[in-house]
Image 1 (tube, rainbow, N blue to C red):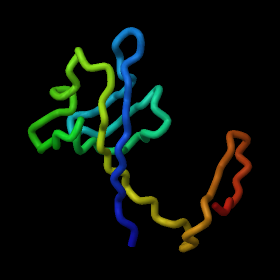
Image 2 (cartoon, one colour):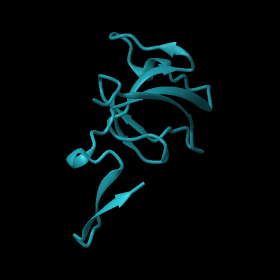
Image 3 (tube, rainbow, N blue to C red):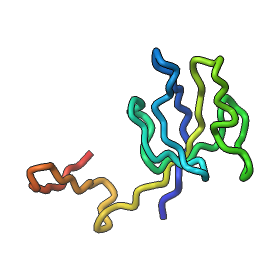
Image 4 (cartoon, rainbow, N blue to C red):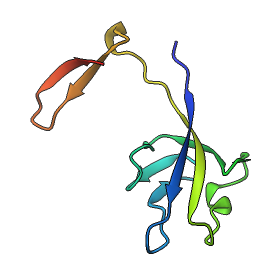
Length: 102
């Protein structure tokens, strides 16, 4: 059984002041345009060390006068496909699919 892992990611505002994040009401990332470390489905647990509780939305802690933030996110573990812990099933846009070991 796999467990989720927690990572810290620093995000910065662009020249227009946008972070490029789309976050739903449960603090789950639904879109992340400029931050390759973040993934759709990551859950934001804290902002700059301030833990989010069930009633606090991440936007309440993203103050406009700050240029960057450190987000602690929880990423769901990916279950191995077909019971092969070190194999990943990769599909390419040309619909050619293959297994790849990492």
